[in-house]
Each structure stands twice: as structure tokens, then as C-alpha cells.
Amino acid sequence: MYVSFMSKCEKTFQVKTIKGEHTCCRVSNSQHCTSKFLAKKYETNIRSNPDWPAGSMQEIMQRDNKTSLSLWKMYRVKKHAAKSISGTEIEQYNNFGITLRKFIGLILILQLKLNVSMI
Image 1: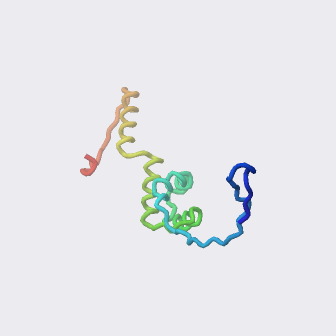
Image 2 (image 1 turned 30 degrees about the vertical axis):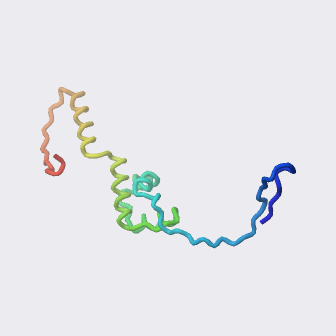
Image 3 (image 1 turned 90 degrees about the horizontal axis):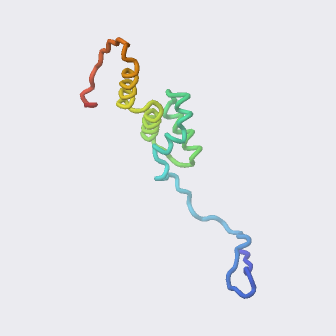
């Protein structure tokens, strides 16, 4: 390690160069690489290819982020990305209701299949 003093009267110094070997091991899984983070980062890729296979997604994201990712996390990434791209079902129906109110003269026949888990 090569250092030099910042000034003659102070006892502070600055490291100029370090010649040393890195001995820490690389961490291959990061808790900061969440499915929401990945969904936001790769949203444009998922938007252009919504049928992107999870295995291919996993390979690319692991290579780009230099971390290990599970296949289940890839499915969660796709779910979060789909939600941010198209919104939730409730938001879509709310927008549809606003559109119907704008066009009052429009006659519409709807056949709805209610999902009990949504209620």
C-alpha cells in the first residue's frame, strides 16, 4: 500500500495505490434483487414478449445481475410486471365504468362471470 500525507502539519494521509489480492468470496444471492425490482427493471422486455419462458428469463437475469435467482422468483417477476403493465382487474373495471358514464347513449349487453375470490 502506498500512502502520502495530505499536508505537513496534519497527520492525515491519502492512499495512492494498493497492491493486494482480494480474498473475500463472492455472494451469489442478494436480498436486494427482489421480484418487484426485477419486474420494474425488465418491464419493457416482458411487455414486448409476454410469453418469455421463465427458464430463459432466469438465465438472462442471473447473468445481468450476477446473482442466483429461483424459477419461482421468475414467475413472481412475470406476475408483478403483468400487474404494472395492464393494471389489476379492479382498476380495469373502474376504468370501464368511467368510459360507460362518458357514453351514456351506448347500449351494451354484458355477460359477466363473477369470481367468488374477487368479492
